[in-house]
Amino acid sequence: MILRNEYPSLFSNDTEVQDLVKNLTPFLCFCIVINNVQPVLSGVAIGAGWQALVAYVNIACYYLFGIPVGLVLGYKLDWGVKGIWLGMIAGTILQTCVLLVLIYKTNWNEEASLAEDRIRTWGGHEKATVKDTKNTKEET
Image (tube, rainbow, N blue to C red; front, side, top):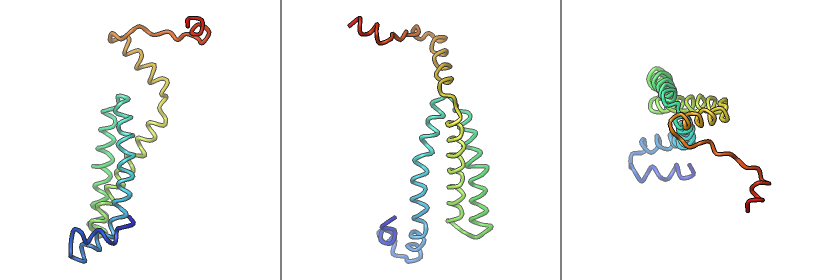
């Protein structure tokens, strides 16, 4: 962001291209930030076994929301590349918000119990008993 006025000249001598890059650099910076949060949330949801839900959220946010918003901003409102990029950023933000709400509202203790039940059902080890600290100290 600090060097947004210098680095475009490394890639093009065309001043129009350089100006466009300078104007789009804040969007790039914001995309980098949001695209570091969204995959983490997506990974947590997939790790929790919600692969299908994440796929539906992804399709809805990008294809049913982000792309149409980008097309309207880019072509109907004549914002060009900036409008298309804003639409895709909006899709990413929406997906991040939806996943954040899903993860926040999840009862993780219940999810852990369900996972433990599945492990036992499919041949996992017997449930380990937790000894209190007195017994542990007496044994040592």
